Length: 305
Image (tube, rainbow, N blue to C red; front, side):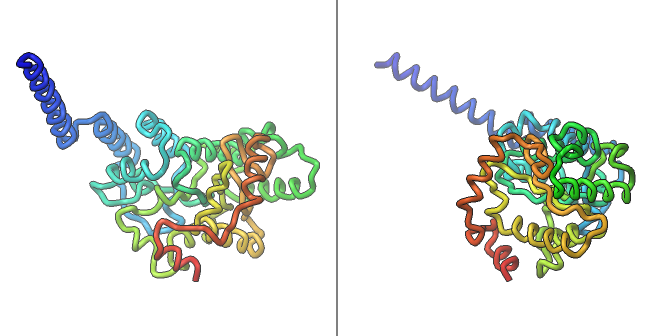
């Protein structure tokens, strides 16, 4: 009994020491994630030595290259997690010293595409979907995206023609634009997470979402879609969808409208796996838009007005 008691006490002492060390380690900030955050913060300082505050809305987009840079830096930490992990564990710590948006910290760009997405989707899937979109609209995969220039459908041809005109009226042609420079307004990165009340405004017309999507430089909405069509269960996404449809009907010049983006490509042009298309079709047959929700009841009431 004495020997058993000795080993039990020894085991408890070892466990207590290990727990104490782990707690001190965490409190001291000496963790792999903390070190990676500091490395990335230093990288951002080199890329954008003098970050400064800029107006909410369209001036706070970031390029897909900047998104990929962030994703690759923290891929081992994010893993199969979503934006609900990325924002508090990566975006907030990175932006805390200056209390800016991530876009302002990394170097903001004027918006080209507005991103509508659900935070609960896997972060890496969202990044992959935007990369596919950027490659397509810049022309990198135009010849092999399953129909951008080869489909016989007249509606598809009209969308292609509109997309061509959109890019030729911008900074470059469809063939020459660099896909990594394609810029996106993404709420997680474009909103100042330290001043969300200011970002949302007192009404949806004053919100950063509305201002970015309605800006003259915005070429369309890239809605990140998964097999469960989760964006259509969120009030903010439905609000963005409505605004997109209204703009499509009233602002023909330079506005492409809604593009549905998946991991395998943009659905509008056939660049989507058959399994994904079928799964989305089944999901849409039973989806009730009136059941859409928001993280904040206040946001939902404001949107529903």
